[in-house]
Image (cartoon, one colour):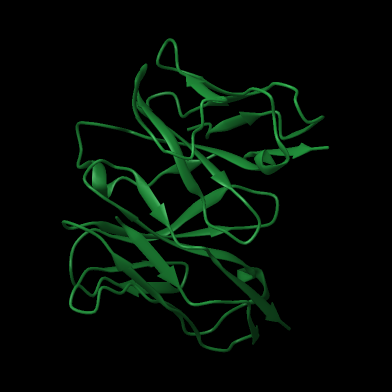
Length: 111
Length: 118
């Protein structure tokens, strides 16, 4: 079946550091890929998405590129802020529209 | 877009009791999904509806769980004879549904209902 594997956390960075959170997937067909962010006490919010190979999703300084050859969708940001502290989830959608999520990576940014 | 609304936000109950949660999706969304999330894990799919039809149920959804969406708008998730292992965050999400590529549609999540079993 479909699965998503994220790098284990937690990740702790200083403000303005470079962020990478790794995500790889296994799926039949051609899934769309997503990153969601979850702040404490809230539901998941869409951060960015990519719907086909080599697409780059971007939002709020975050980027991720859909790499079909390595089945990866790594999240990056050049300079993190304290306000980026949250849990980040990588996810895929198949043609049925149902989502499969990774286990999440907790990011803490210290001033 | 008023967002996905879930009620209650928190539910504390004794083992063996029945509980019911409600989800109000974004009004024009045809698809509605239920997920369960435990600490340190990502959301796990439970079931989904297209309008009032329940199209798929996960094997995680034991016969103590039932979900309905009677008029294709709000949905309820009921757990009968609750057990300690049912303690989790129950998330509802919605998406527009057919008419556009389903795989491209992100899910819009509510803030969840946290269930605690004493």
